[in-house]
Image (cartoon, rainbow, N blue to C red):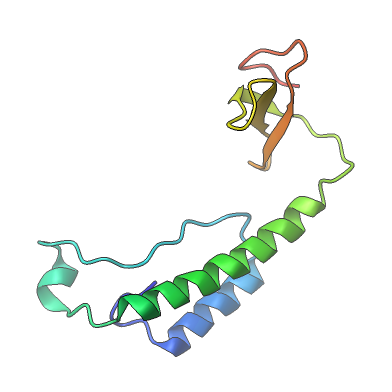
Length: 117
């Protein structure tokens, strides 16, 4: 967010598209000029850091709401998960992903990295 040609109307369109598409997750960043790129050579980075920050928080909040609602649908369900490695929070847990790329954390048990559980 925050590219110089992105108006408030374009931001609203982006938010509307996010609501419509219901992405599982997304990568969101504030625009920062990269020297030597066509954009840096031809366009002025004229959006303030304050506005970029506000816009970024808006799309992050919406994505968090969408992701939470989608993830809550998995509560109480059993899914197959590929064990990728230890959880970042505990050496007593594995983390992996199901076939929908949803990250799952679960007790280690007798599983190993690479197992389908």
